[in-house]
Length: 412
Image (cartoon, rainbow, N blue to C red; front, top):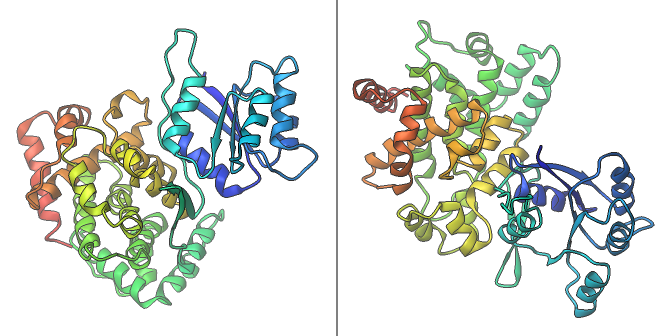
């Protein structure tokens, strides 16, 4: 049974950022928007640790809730991390007075929060339960850099995507309505028809309308294609990344081909290829040295997200999963983006759908690196495990899948 963590903050965005930092298979996370709400929840489902803001509306603030927890059975064994913007000496002394177990100041380092929570939640053998970056939801992230606050704002979902997703959430979504939404967007309509008519789908007869395309490939595949087109059109590229979407499109197309060869979900594999590094342009926009550092990180044996955390107090995989959640992408994709640079993929107890996505992407990305003359030491560390997991240990079979992936980028 995983440790239970209650996140208490009146700011929706901050609750989601804390959730993003702490989400991992070892933790069960819940939220409350006030100290009063948190107090009510304690009686029904007592957590092991509380991450607690100080200044919140209601009858009780964070200091008061912490004091209550620490001075009353059966709650006094609960760990309390105060996470607050109040940084004066008197504020910290008050945190000590109410017996908080840790006092962290906003804007906070997700990496520091992960480590502090892991330390406080040691199990009986003294083993620290490691937290990994995590489950996002909001369209904006606030992170610390040189004692200032930097804001990474995700592009909002385009209205056509919102409309189609809302329609798809209905029990009986309307194909004519979805087709009408797509047809009203010239760029989206052209991209959909071009993709559906490509050799990848292998249709005998070319389609000429959005309705025909939907009827042939289905609403779910259509939604995934709309997402793919939308991210290309609405994520701005800074200088130095002019060919970013061309490169990610190749990885996406090869990933879909690999998934198809292995009888896995080719549409999700395509989305994984497109969205896995979607936060790279956002990081590059905020940090002038990011692109050069990002290239260097690929040659380190240290995990890329750890290197980025150490340098920027944030990493592109974490932000990418936050953006994916903000765009309401499939949950498997959100989780796959979050951990796609982790070295311990096969020790994380991942759902097979998530692990499939990551492994297929890693092979596709490796092929892309080879096409560009690049070397990624991270793939070399995992290649044998990936091939064994995907039943690609036979060299002939592996080369066949490899060659089909290469052929696919010439077919679209």
